[in-house]
Amino acid sequence: VGLVGRAAAAAHSRKRLEAVPFERIDIISPDESGTAGRLAKLLREALELRYKYLSRHHRPSPWLVELDLKPKSSPDADVSPDQFEFVMVDGVVQVSRSGGPLDPVCSVASDGSPRHLPSYAEFVRDLEQILEASADPELSHLAGKRLQVLEHKFGMHKGFNSTAEDFCDTEDHRDFYQTYKVDVHVHMSAGFPAKCLMDFFTQKVHNHGGDIVLKSADGNPLTLSEFIAENNLRVEEFDAHAVAASNFEQQADSTAAKLRSLLLHADNYMGGRYYAEVIRQEFTSMEKDAFKFSENRLTVSGKSASDWALLAQWCISHGVQSKHNKWTVQVPQSYAFLRRSGYLKSFQEFLSNLFLPLWEVSVDPNQNYQLAHFLKHMAGFDCVPVSGSKVYGGGIPTETPEQWTREENPPFHYYLYYLHANVAALNTFRASRGLSTLLLRPHCVRAKDCLAACYLLADGVSHCVVPLAEAPAMQYLYYLTRIGVAASPLSENSSWAEYSSHPFPLFFRRGLNATLSTDTPLRVHHTREPLLEEYAMANKMWQFSPTDMCEIARSSVLQSGFGHDVLKHWLGDLYFLSSSNGNAPEASHCPDIRIAYRFEVYHAEVDYLECVAGDKFRRYM
Image (cartoon, rainbow, N blue to C red; front, side, top):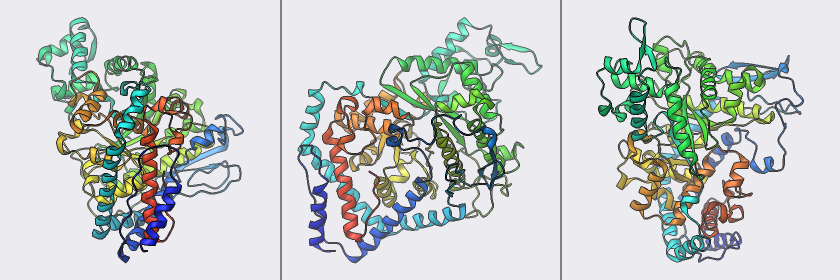
């Protein structure tokens, strides 16, 4: 590949230019050595591997929804629930028509065509290929150079076009506060500032001291006032941060843990009444802002198959729902704790408790109408690490979930594979019945297999900023595949990265699909508007322009699990198009110049890789 090839690539890029007037910059890269061709082919193979798993999610594309080409218009259409049989085999639910063969991806298409999920063994081979490629020092060097080019391109773009972009905002009287934004990563049990919880607790103590809140050690009912006296509590000494800090495996004998159980648990003696009241109070406050939405996390531990029914019953009986919120169910990596406590005998039992109840109501919503209703308001799944839990360190596991009876947690990639496989199978079935589908957006921890496993399997990730900043090859792959990254700089300031050195602005300048979220307002935020506090701090610290802020907010909407009709209203009818043709500036408040710039730079980057590799690349934008 020589300079002639470079010129041809640049000419090809110019053919992609959109009819949006702004100053454009072409950077013709110097001729690369033969090594660059080998490295580009590694990137191409990695992009194909991502697509292999992404294509199995089986969620209907927005343009098919728009054209009403869904396989079924209602869950009752054409097929009786009695015609389906399902069972978990090797950790994945398989379904069949009555008397027919089991299908590992539950294909129920009219033509009966099989669509098979990659096996765990195949996934491990793909994972090792990604890990090997990301560890290649030459690939890391190339990826680092390309990311720097992207960063400098953005700097030059802003130098030439910032006035034009900001003028578009001013001309149409746009305001960031009137831009739709979604908090895509926030835990409901810590989803409100400490002041709100303290005010709630104080009000209850002063006005509702006679509420019976639990049973005493001798089995007698205990009122709130008696609970306060028994634990030598004083309202003015209430520590909301200590309540927030008590974790999943903590014993319930500390005062903070008792308060957490009383105020922030749904399965306590009161049936989660106080927790529901706090949430309703928070939702009422959020609904006053027409442009602010959230995807709060609730926990299903996998301890019992009844967890789902209890959660759905609690949500509906207490009115814990809002049009401004979608639920994300977080699955803690709690198998080891539950196994040691005697709740589980194998990892397959853990998976069965998580997914078989969802299959029951997907096949027949009348089995549990409350859970069927809850799933309509659910965006997807999260996988959350549990601090202090013992993780298997013996390399790649060979056991099936049914054979995994150790008292150790499986590795992160093992959790993630079986979550992905079951979510993909469930999505296939639900989409075929015209039901809502689910995302998989896990936490990404520092384990070496985490970034690679999420790259293959996840729709988006949280808490990955430091590992991603330290791995240029993976960061470049996340850019090329447009995987959503949710960062919470204020929360991560205390545990991952100091705010001043946080990599979020670097990700944003380079063009990664990154947005801001709050994570745990109860622990770190000080105002009654945690999400706006997060945006405001980023704006001041990193000098984001109004256009930058609107672009970050737009990314949060696109990463979210809100439905097609909602996104049309928020971003425009063609929001699913990546070019400026899909942008409605009057809705997104993001000027066409910025959207066109991101689109053209992405395709110019892929053009460069195609030119170096001498082969076509899969494009994700």
